[in-house]
Length: 321
Image (cartoon, rainbow, N blue to C red; front, side, top):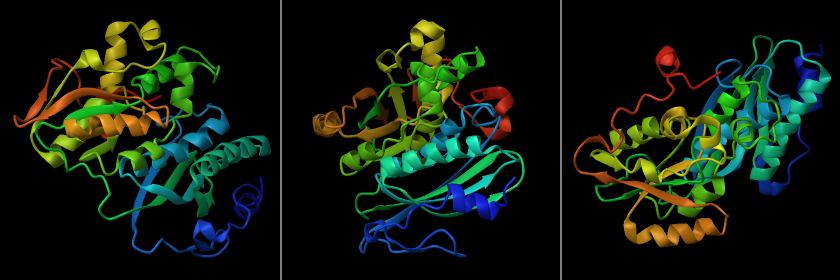
Protein backbone atom coordinates (compact mmCIF):
# COMPACT_ATOMS: atom_id res chain seq x y z
CA UNK A 1 0.00 0.00 0.00
CA UNK A 2 1.15 3.53 -0.66
CA UNK A 3 2.24 5.74 2.25
CA UNK A 4 -0.32 8.11 3.71
CA UNK A 5 1.50 11.00 2.03
CA UNK A 6 1.23 9.31 -1.35
CA UNK A 7 -2.50 8.74 -0.79
CA UNK A 8 -3.06 12.37 0.20
CA UNK A 9 -1.16 13.61 -2.84
CA UNK A 10 -2.86 11.21 -5.24
CA UNK A 11 -6.48 11.22 -4.06
CA UNK A 12 -7.09 14.08 -1.65
CA UNK A 13 -5.16 17.11 -2.89
CA UNK A 14 -7.51 19.29 -4.89
CA UNK A 15 -6.36 21.71 -7.54
CA UNK A 16 -5.29 25.04 -6.02
CA UNK A 17 -8.55 26.78 -5.13
CA UNK A 18 -9.36 30.22 -6.45
CA UNK A 19 -9.56 33.26 -4.15
CA UNK A 20 -13.33 32.82 -3.85
CA UNK A 21 -12.74 29.61 -1.88
CA UNK A 22 -11.25 31.54 1.03
CA UNK A 23 -8.29 29.17 1.41
CA UNK A 24 -5.00 31.02 1.79
CA UNK A 25 -3.14 27.75 2.48
CA UNK A 26 -4.70 24.33 2.03
CA UNK A 27 -3.71 20.67 1.89
CA UNK A 28 -0.02 19.94 2.47
CA UNK A 29 1.03 22.02 5.47
CA UNK A 30 0.58 21.59 9.22
CA UNK A 31 -2.51 23.79 9.24
CA UNK A 32 -4.87 25.32 6.74
CA UNK A 33 -5.20 29.10 6.63
CA UNK A 34 -8.77 30.18 5.95
CA UNK A 35 -10.26 33.58 5.20
CA UNK A 36 -13.85 33.76 6.50
CA UNK A 37 -16.17 36.38 5.05
CA UNK A 38 -16.16 39.53 7.20
CA UNK A 39 -19.30 39.91 9.29
CA UNK A 40 -20.21 36.22 9.13
CA UNK A 41 -20.07 33.66 11.89
CA UNK A 42 -18.45 30.27 11.44
CA UNK A 43 -20.66 27.22 11.83
CA UNK A 44 -18.57 24.13 12.60
CA UNK A 45 -19.60 20.50 13.01
CA UNK A 46 -17.87 17.11 13.06
CA UNK A 47 -19.19 13.60 12.43
CA UNK A 48 -17.51 10.21 12.41
CA UNK A 49 -18.76 7.44 10.13
CA UNK A 50 -17.69 3.93 11.15
CA UNK A 51 -17.97 0.82 8.98
CA UNK A 52 -20.57 -1.56 10.34
CA UNK A 53 -22.16 1.16 12.48
CA UNK A 54 -23.08 4.00 10.11
CA UNK A 55 -22.79 2.18 6.79
CA UNK A 56 -22.18 -1.39 5.58
CA UNK A 57 -18.46 -2.06 5.21
CA UNK A 58 -19.10 -3.62 1.81
CA UNK A 59 -21.09 -0.66 0.50
CA UNK A 60 -19.83 0.89 -2.76
CA UNK A 61 -16.78 3.05 -2.08
CA UNK A 62 -18.26 6.00 -3.97
CA UNK A 63 -21.31 5.90 -1.70
CA UNK A 64 -19.13 5.74 1.43
CA UNK A 65 -17.23 8.84 0.33
CA UNK A 66 -20.40 10.75 -0.52
CA UNK A 67 -22.20 9.71 2.64
CA UNK A 68 -19.37 10.60 5.01
CA UNK A 69 -19.43 14.20 3.79
CA UNK A 70 -23.21 14.44 3.37
CA UNK A 71 -24.06 13.62 6.99
CA UNK A 72 -21.76 16.40 8.20
CA UNK A 73 -23.01 18.94 5.68
CA UNK A 74 -26.55 18.20 6.85
CA UNK A 75 -25.67 19.82 10.20
CA UNK A 76 -24.72 23.03 8.39
CA UNK A 77 -28.04 22.89 6.54
CA UNK A 78 -29.91 22.75 9.85
CA UNK A 79 -28.18 25.98 10.93
CA UNK A 80 -29.00 27.78 7.69
CA UNK A 81 -25.28 28.03 6.95
CA UNK A 82 -23.53 28.08 3.59
CA UNK A 83 -20.90 25.36 3.31
CA UNK A 84 -17.32 26.57 2.79
CA UNK A 85 -14.65 24.09 3.96
CA UNK A 86 -14.19 20.53 5.16
CA UNK A 87 -11.44 18.45 6.76
CA UNK A 88 -11.31 14.66 6.61
CA UNK A 89 -9.56 12.15 8.89
CA UNK A 90 -9.58 8.80 7.08
CA UNK A 91 -8.69 5.55 8.84
CA UNK A 92 -8.46 2.44 6.67
CA UNK A 93 -6.69 -0.84 6.12
CA UNK A 94 -4.93 -1.56 2.83
CA UNK A 95 -7.33 -0.78 -0.01
CA UNK A 96 -6.85 -1.19 -3.77
CA UNK A 97 -6.43 1.90 -5.89
CA UNK A 98 -9.83 1.30 -7.47
CA UNK A 99 -11.54 1.56 -4.06
CA UNK A 100 -9.67 4.77 -3.18
CA UNK A 101 -10.42 6.26 -6.58
CA UNK A 102 -14.14 5.58 -6.15
CA UNK A 103 -14.18 6.81 -2.53
CA UNK A 104 -12.45 10.07 -3.41
CA UNK A 105 -14.69 10.50 -6.45
CA UNK A 106 -17.82 10.30 -4.29
CA UNK A 107 -16.36 12.70 -1.73
CA UNK A 108 -15.12 15.20 -4.30
CA UNK A 109 -18.34 15.15 -6.31
CA UNK A 110 -20.32 16.29 -3.28
CA UNK A 111 -17.66 18.90 -2.48
CA UNK A 112 -18.10 20.30 -5.99
CA UNK A 113 -21.91 20.14 -5.85
CA UNK A 114 -22.07 22.05 -2.56
CA UNK A 115 -19.21 24.53 -2.97
CA UNK A 116 -17.20 22.89 -0.20
CA UNK A 117 -13.40 23.00 -0.35
CA UNK A 118 -11.37 20.13 1.14
CA UNK A 119 -8.78 22.14 3.08
CA UNK A 120 -6.91 19.44 5.00
CA UNK A 121 -7.05 16.18 6.90
CA UNK A 122 -5.18 13.06 7.88
CA UNK A 123 -4.88 9.41 6.84
CA UNK A 124 -3.96 6.59 9.20
CA UNK A 125 -4.16 2.80 9.29
CA UNK A 126 -6.90 0.92 11.13
CA UNK A 127 -10.50 -0.22 10.80
CA UNK A 128 -12.45 1.81 8.28
CA UNK A 129 -13.74 5.08 9.74
CA UNK A 130 -14.10 8.58 8.34
CA UNK A 131 -14.18 11.70 10.48
CA UNK A 132 -15.35 14.81 8.65
CA UNK A 133 -15.30 18.34 10.03
CA UNK A 134 -17.30 20.89 8.07
CA UNK A 135 -17.20 24.66 8.34
CA UNK A 136 -19.76 27.08 6.99
CA UNK A 137 -20.79 30.70 7.29
CA UNK A 138 -24.01 32.32 8.40
CA UNK A 139 -25.13 35.85 9.17
CA UNK A 140 -25.38 36.28 12.96
CA UNK A 141 -29.08 37.13 12.85
CA UNK A 142 -29.92 34.27 10.47
CA UNK A 143 -28.47 31.27 12.30
CA UNK A 144 -31.08 28.63 13.10
CA UNK A 145 -30.89 26.78 16.41
CA UNK A 146 -32.91 24.19 18.25
CA UNK A 147 -34.03 26.67 20.89
CA UNK A 148 -36.23 29.16 19.04
CA UNK A 149 -39.51 27.25 18.77
CA UNK A 150 -42.59 28.72 20.45
CA UNK A 151 -46.06 27.31 21.27
CA UNK A 152 -48.29 27.61 18.23
CA UNK A 153 -45.47 27.25 15.71
CA UNK A 154 -46.08 24.74 12.97
CA UNK A 155 -43.81 21.69 12.76
CA UNK A 156 -42.85 20.86 9.17
CA UNK A 157 -40.40 18.67 7.27
CA UNK A 158 -38.71 18.95 3.89
CA UNK A 159 -38.85 16.17 1.35
CA UNK A 160 -39.98 12.67 2.32
CA UNK A 161 -39.32 10.48 5.35
CA UNK A 162 -38.44 6.86 6.01
CA UNK A 163 -36.22 6.39 2.98
CA UNK A 164 -33.07 5.96 5.03
CA UNK A 165 -34.51 3.17 7.15
CA UNK A 166 -36.22 1.66 4.11
CA UNK A 167 -32.96 1.69 2.19
CA UNK A 168 -31.12 -0.01 5.04
CA UNK A 169 -33.83 -2.69 5.15
CA UNK A 170 -33.46 -3.15 1.39
CA UNK A 171 -29.68 -3.55 1.74
CA UNK A 172 -30.10 -6.08 4.54
CA UNK A 173 -32.55 -7.99 2.33
CA UNK A 174 -29.90 -8.26 -0.39
CA UNK A 175 -30.71 -5.33 -2.67
CA UNK A 176 -27.54 -3.99 -4.33
CA UNK A 177 -28.88 -1.80 -7.14
CA UNK A 178 -27.88 1.73 -6.09
CA UNK A 179 -30.57 3.02 -8.44
CA UNK A 180 -33.25 1.51 -6.18
CA UNK A 181 -35.14 4.57 -4.83
CA UNK A 182 -34.90 3.56 -1.17
CA UNK A 183 -31.32 2.28 -1.33
CA UNK A 184 -30.26 5.48 -3.10
CA UNK A 185 -31.73 7.54 -0.23
CA UNK A 186 -29.73 5.51 2.28
CA UNK A 187 -26.40 5.38 0.46
CA UNK A 188 -26.49 8.83 -1.17
CA UNK A 189 -28.34 11.20 1.21
CA UNK A 190 -28.75 14.77 -0.02
CA UNK A 191 -27.92 17.46 2.54
CA UNK A 192 -30.52 20.23 2.30
CA UNK A 193 -28.09 23.15 2.27
CA UNK A 194 -30.01 25.35 -0.15
CA UNK A 195 -33.23 24.71 1.79
CA UNK A 196 -31.57 25.64 5.07
CA UNK A 197 -30.40 28.96 3.65
CA UNK A 198 -33.82 29.63 2.15
CA UNK A 199 -35.57 28.99 5.47
CA UNK A 200 -33.04 30.73 7.71
CA UNK A 201 -35.02 33.95 8.24
CA UNK A 202 -38.41 32.24 8.33
CA UNK A 203 -38.00 29.28 10.66
CA UNK A 204 -37.77 29.73 14.42
CA UNK A 205 -35.96 26.42 15.07
CA UNK A 206 -34.51 23.59 13.01
CA UNK A 207 -32.74 20.25 13.25
CA UNK A 208 -31.60 17.75 10.65
CA UNK A 209 -33.24 14.32 10.75
CA UNK A 210 -30.35 11.96 11.36
CA UNK A 211 -31.48 9.89 14.36
CA UNK A 212 -35.20 9.71 13.64
CA UNK A 213 -37.99 12.30 13.60
CA UNK A 214 -39.18 11.65 17.15
CA UNK A 215 -35.69 11.71 18.62
CA UNK A 216 -34.65 14.83 16.72
CA UNK A 217 -37.91 16.64 17.47
CA UNK A 218 -37.19 15.77 21.09
CA UNK A 219 -34.01 17.86 20.83
CA UNK A 220 -36.05 20.87 19.74
CA UNK A 221 -38.51 20.38 22.61
CA UNK A 222 -35.64 20.06 25.06
CA UNK A 223 -34.11 23.37 23.95
CA UNK A 224 -37.29 25.30 23.14
CA UNK A 225 -39.47 24.06 25.98
CA UNK A 226 -43.09 22.97 25.77
CA UNK A 227 -44.28 20.02 23.71
CA UNK A 228 -45.64 19.06 20.32
CA UNK A 229 -48.68 17.41 18.80
CA UNK A 230 -47.99 15.43 15.64
CA UNK A 231 -50.34 14.24 12.91
CA UNK A 232 -48.86 10.88 11.82
CA UNK A 233 -51.24 10.63 8.89
CA UNK A 234 -49.60 13.75 7.44
CA UNK A 235 -46.10 12.25 7.31
CA UNK A 236 -44.70 12.41 3.74
CA UNK A 237 -43.42 8.88 3.09
CA UNK A 238 -40.57 8.09 0.71
CA UNK A 239 -41.37 6.59 -2.66
CA UNK A 240 -41.85 2.83 -2.44
CA UNK A 241 -41.70 2.73 1.37
CA UNK A 242 -45.22 1.41 2.00
CA UNK A 243 -44.84 -1.17 -0.76
CA UNK A 244 -41.55 -2.36 0.73
CA UNK A 245 -42.42 -2.37 4.43
CA UNK A 246 -46.20 -2.20 4.77
CA UNK A 247 -48.10 0.73 6.26
CA UNK A 248 -47.27 0.15 9.94
CA UNK A 249 -43.53 -0.38 9.43
CA UNK A 250 -43.37 2.48 6.93
CA UNK A 251 -44.78 4.90 9.49
CA UNK A 252 -42.40 3.58 12.14
CA UNK A 253 -39.50 4.10 9.72
CA UNK A 254 -40.61 7.70 9.15
CA UNK A 255 -40.96 8.38 12.88
CA UNK A 256 -37.95 6.56 14.31
CA UNK A 257 -35.82 5.08 11.55
CA UNK A 258 -33.29 7.88 11.06
CA UNK A 259 -30.82 8.50 8.23
CA UNK A 260 -33.22 10.75 6.28
CA UNK A 261 -31.17 13.98 6.52
CA UNK A 262 -34.20 16.10 5.75
CA UNK A 263 -34.83 19.27 7.76
CA UNK A 264 -37.41 19.50 10.53
CA UNK A 265 -38.36 23.12 11.16
CA UNK A 266 -40.72 25.15 13.33
CA UNK A 267 -42.25 28.35 12.00
CA UNK A 268 -45.27 30.62 12.58
CA UNK A 269 -48.28 29.75 10.43
CA UNK A 270 -48.20 33.13 8.66
CA UNK A 271 -44.78 32.31 7.22
CA UNK A 272 -45.74 28.93 5.76
CA UNK A 273 -46.75 30.15 2.29
CA UNK A 274 -43.49 32.05 1.86
CA UNK A 275 -41.45 29.07 3.06
CA UNK A 276 -43.21 26.80 0.58
CA UNK A 277 -42.70 29.33 -2.21
CA UNK A 278 -38.95 29.44 -1.55
CA UNK A 279 -38.64 25.67 -1.44
CA UNK A 280 -40.74 25.26 -4.57
CA UNK A 281 -37.93 27.05 -6.41
CA UNK A 282 -35.74 24.15 -5.24
CA UNK A 283 -38.34 21.55 -6.29
CA UNK A 284 -38.61 20.54 -2.63
CA UNK A 285 -41.91 20.12 -0.78
CA UNK A 286 -42.51 21.32 2.78
CA UNK A 287 -45.11 19.32 4.72
CA UNK A 288 -46.75 20.40 7.97
CA UNK A 289 -46.87 17.45 10.37
CA UNK A 290 -47.89 19.08 13.64
CA UNK A 291 -47.67 22.05 15.96
CA UNK A 292 -45.72 23.05 19.07
CA UNK A 293 -47.77 23.22 22.28
CA UNK A 294 -47.47 24.78 25.69
CA UNK A 295 -48.18 21.42 27.32
CA UNK A 296 -44.93 19.46 27.59
CA UNK A 297 -44.49 16.09 25.98
CA UNK A 298 -45.11 14.53 22.60
CA UNK A 299 -48.72 13.95 21.65
CA UNK A 300 -50.48 12.20 18.79
CA UNK A 301 -48.16 9.21 18.44
CA UNK A 302 -49.08 6.78 21.25
CA UNK A 303 -46.75 3.83 21.59
CA UNK A 304 -44.15 5.17 19.15
CA UNK A 305 -40.48 4.76 20.02
CA UNK A 306 -38.83 8.08 20.76
CA UNK A 307 -35.24 7.03 21.32
CA UNK A 308 -34.15 6.79 17.70
CA UNK A 309 -30.52 5.81 17.24
CA UNK A 310 -28.21 6.10 20.25
CA UNK A 311 -24.74 4.57 20.06
CA UNK A 312 -24.68 3.29 23.61
CA UNK A 313 -28.22 1.96 23.51
CA UNK A 314 -28.08 0.45 20.06
CA UNK A 315 -29.38 -2.89 21.34
CA UNK A 316 -32.69 -1.16 22.14
CA UNK A 317 -33.13 1.06 19.14
CA UNK A 318 -31.70 -0.52 16.03
CA UNK A 319 -31.50 1.56 12.90
CA UNK A 320 -27.94 0.88 11.76
CA UNK A 321 -26.25 -2.01 9.91
